[in-house]
Image (tube, rainbow, N blue to C red; front, side, top):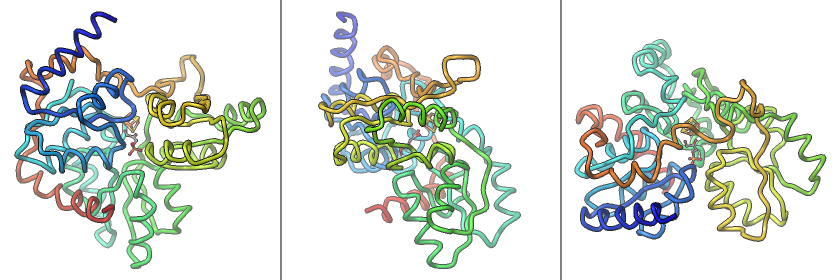
Length: 319
Ligand code: 13P
Ligand code: SF4
């Protein structure tokens, strides 16, 4: 604990000296979320992280999350310095959608509007008409479907399937998935519901269809937290990364939260509801964030200008 306090004090001092602010995701560790809150930064979902970084006057953004979040911040505010505890924190959705293959896919279907999830590289965003996060995915798909537009959806097939079922949009799907949410098992959740029949099930839409079918509410991380506050249930089964429990407990302290079962602790579980890349955001790495030369986010200027168009469209649509 003493060491943790010393690290936190050092980070606070450097943030102030460097005119910097922390932009953290709900999946980072409780220590990092608490520090972001204490120092006037933000803890939020992907959409609000993008908006906060864009609107905040700080000269430097310290993005505690994964690489696409740092890139999004840099694209939206190219004049700011964007640092991350480590640039190695990536995402299986980003990794599963290489820009050259994706461009060829889009070129083969020129009649379709290209919608990509925020969890993609700057180069993939630069090829898109729209960027969405899970909090506005349904609304954007509805908007496009109402205009009769056919869609390419990438990279998350589970989110895309969910959007297709809910909106009836004509979607051609890329084959990608989140290794964390893909592990949740409908069978395990149904078993847990037998033990706690009063528990409501809250599910992130990156989860597979059988898990979504069991949900009382489906939504982004922010929407899951809101649902836990609004619903009358005293107990919840939560199918998303365990990092969210910090905020759930803070916002609904009288309620009980149970993690949805994954494949178990055996060899088949790669993530166990704990994103390995989000977990790279350690306090030690944050403490050294201003002193290294290998953790600043750069995005090619021309690429960034192209990627900014669908990103701004997303922010304007969500406004
Ligand atoms: P949201 O916070 O936008 O729901 O995204 C979840 C996620 O997987 C980010 O990596
Ligand atoms: Fe990517 Fe899933 Fe990790 Fe989010 S939780 S960063 S979608 S791998």
